[in-house]
Image 1 (cartoon, one colour):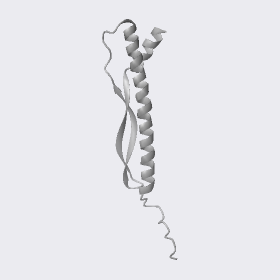
Image 2 (image 1 turned 135 degrees about the vertical axis):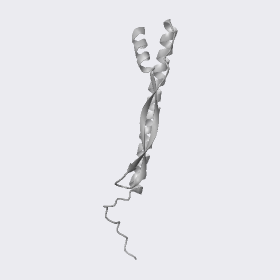
Image 3 (image 1 turned 90 degrees about the vertical axis):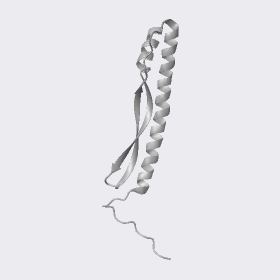
Image 4 (image 1 turned 60 degrees about the vertical axis):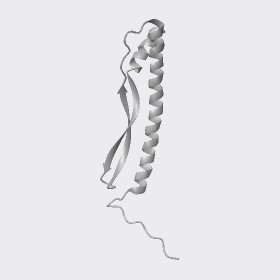
Length: 105
């Protein structure tokens, strides 16, 4: 059991996930939009840990990695949904037919 936790901790403790925003030009709509992605950031490894203390430390690091993936992933999804709505409202397609004006009463 301890070896399994140690192996999982070593693999998971190598990174933390953070949202990253990039600007992208949409030529169809002729606007700049934002696009969010999930990026892995390296965390320095642990040097010189031994026994149960090391297992606990690596298990905690694995929990932090999982939590960062959930929180940052939620931020990325929400940010991209907002961007999608903004793009739909601001899109100025060249080939799109003009919007009809309502008749005067």
